[in-house]
Length: 384
Ligand SMILES: C[S@@+](CC[C@H](N)C(=O)[O-])C[C@H]1O[C@@H](n2cnc3c(N)ncnc32)[C@H](O)[C@@H]1O
Ligand code: SF4
Image (cartoon, rainbow, N blue to C red; front, side):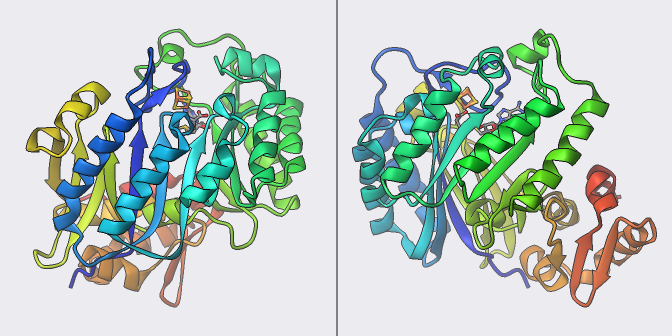
């Protein structure tokens, strides 16, 4: 029996001041005056179209991602949240995150985001080294990044994440450590620590920057930084996510636990369990902001949809669950995929024999080795 898991709301805001050369997100350099109000109107039409898929269910977290959501005036974020909370049931004390580029932080804005209901900020810091920031094409320097974080703290945001990247062009181990020390000084509740990857369809992929650390150096940076994060009280709970106790990102945890999410906005993806039909639906919206603005709320705005067939569900579940240090409960596998645990007994045994997983009681937990070879472990669960 397939039972719907907790439901989150993802809202994609697609514009940035400038496109970063490493970024393959659906983000577009905003030229001239951006149609913020028109885009929020489109979001509301989009939401209204999706509502019948989630009647009666509560929303457990909201995430404004991008792009650069902090380009949007607080009044528009407020209007969207007011409308969404009148259409959907918001759970008490739900986490509402807004991604912020420090180069867009303005005095007074954070108070208003807070008044609108935002209670968590995620800053795209990347590095505190001005040379690295320049090579990454960022629009801010390290002083501006610190200023932005302090503005948010002054406005009362005590729950915030800093995104950092490592294995940057021209970076060595000491520089990676320096970035973390500067981050710790700001007392974030959460740090996301990503290895820079060269993604197809980016400028860096077409022309890799000079001075990229080799694989061994990148691995040393990861191991060293993991230890520093642990010493500073940030427990790793996912491949790239570290948090102070009780401060894991509820929204991302829901993705990794194979939760459901509504995806609203240009190019946004959603995953929804349809209880009555005993099926799982993925659907996504048209990608380009201009087309989205014109079509949101109509059939044409759907980029596509597909059902996750039962044979594919074990792999899709593991793709997320095996990223988590906590692993997963077998009973959650059963209720959220609608499949019996016997179906994955073979691959689980195989992974156990290789030292990739331990199964204690009802929980399967990846070992350190399993997390290192996560792709191999996931492959075991592919349909044959
Ligand atoms: C959508 S962006 C977040 C906020 C905002 N757009 C910004 O960049 O300031 C999400 C995060 O993903 C990370 N990221 C983006 N591209 C990446 C890449 N190619 N490799 C590793 N991390 C990447 C960055 O740390 C970035 O802050
Ligand atoms: S600001 Fe963020 S979303 Fe925008 S291009 Fe840069 S990394 Fe991508």
